[in-house]
Length: 481
Image 1 (tube, rainbow, N blue to C red):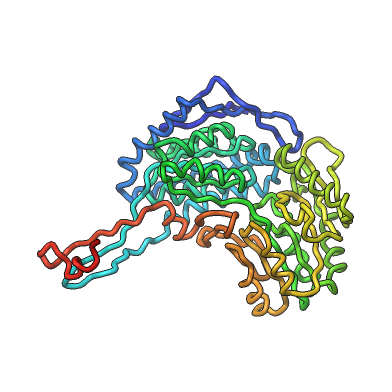
Image 2 (image 1 turned 90 degrees about the vertical axis):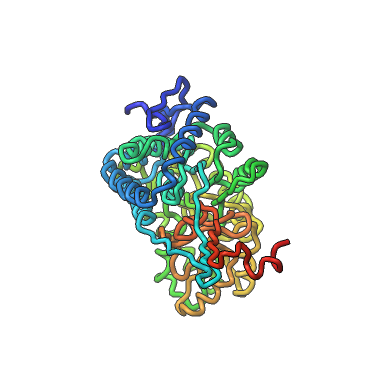
């Protein structure tokens, strides 16, 4: 594999120090990534600030650049997809879909219309509300969808007129490094820069004086640190943090009609999705049938190396997360839970864990109360629907949730009672670039995607043009303090 480089000011930036990137299917280091120095971070910020001077002016140029970026990403699919599988672990088909989704996000924001906002147009004045870019955006991205979640930030930030310095997770830096390298062919130097390193680099970015916006996706613990670091400079922040997303099954459900959807909503990307189903509440009368149906699917799903076309689920991405899933499952089993399927690591190299369905658990067990972020799903029985909703909401998390029922209207009413940013009905993980995504409570600050996500990369400016010629509004004396 060719050596990876950072991209700063449109040029490859080589470092003396590197760090190893492990293939989660083997647990072995298969590539080295550059370790950004303080001087190189300074250079990246300076390059982005310099490029911002021109980039912010011509929206048509930015829209065309995003279309060109989409084409470059699709043209690089044969290189980017396998690289993503090697460092993240997901099956190659899923990796290719992630590259496609990244290109789709670029196209969506290129084509998104921003209507002119006129709030007064009369003999007194023409008053417009305009959206101005912020400046340099520091984007810090996670390891579960390293490329797509980067473009959740990059595409709207660039469309709005900002420039970007992006830092991928040290577990999965390679695909982002390569993608940004390829995109230099259609972007002015400094508009999009990429640096790589560990937590110290992320902390340096959030406290750096140049960025006016921090867009972060990651854990709640890290998100709080980002917010504290950004506060002294009053940087704008968007934080997309963790979730402990409930699914509530109603008593009118036919288990066979929803089991596939619930299993897919929980085990997509091997459970490593912030908005995946993390716990399922099932009526007592349906409980045994639902546990059996989910366990059957867990035992049948092919798990293996992402390069194997037969694999539907890959490994857990990294050793710390692998250890966490083992710990949470072991804790539940020690407390009396039953593994209806799975329950232990697979006997093979790499970070493979059996798809696990846990029965006989309830609130108060760590795997119910905490975010497991892996292939283990607790199924919880309930008698009273109001109690199930209350238990679903009794958490600091509030990212998403879903309700499953034969009566769609009733299910929608229950979904409306969930305290979360997205409440799905008879589906889960239905995400799209036009749909805002964010969390309640500790699950985040602000939203990404759609016109709302684009607006998050801007400041509002009022442009008030007087038509009276007097220099004074008739209401000035009443409203000016």
